[in-house]
Length: 203
Figure 1 (cartoon, rainbow, N blue to C red):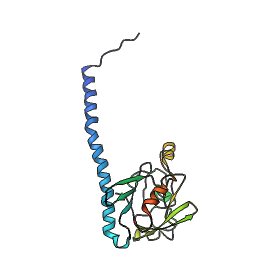
Figure 2 (cartoon, rainbow, N blue to C red):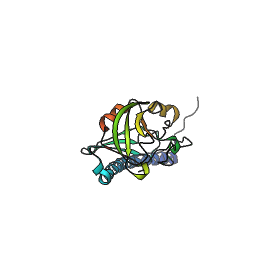
Figure 3 (tube, one colour):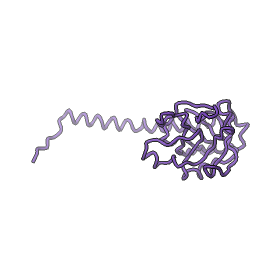
């Protein structure tokens, strides 16, 4: 039988120090999460302050935060009255991530760029298209003014979902559309609906 040695005093201090560091890190992680939520809410408020005169419904605002990787929830629905924020997975365009790293590297409004565009969008009509139930988007800024002609919409895609993240580490990529999972699409379209604001940015 091999002998089991008691940890040295130095090792015990190292363990204690590590535990203390981990305990101290927990509030910092919570604060970072709270800060992220606050940035999303602030982006929703700022968007309404800037283009709210062109938005009929101010109760719910969508914010797509592309400073996050595709493996994380980054399409947020903000309840402007209650402050509730719900997050969903969403793909970015393959032109915005040519190496398929999972990180958006650039925005573009150019036709055939296959990129995600930044800016404020007005949510439009729902329709049945190539990807099933979808919702049109109207770009309200020079940075996304080609949204309608590029057919940039909200739709479901088989390459989006937690199972894709588990298998591949990243989501698949769209051609610039805000593609969500088939499970999340009814929730997103049900709460967002026409006449509301979607903000696409790196927060």
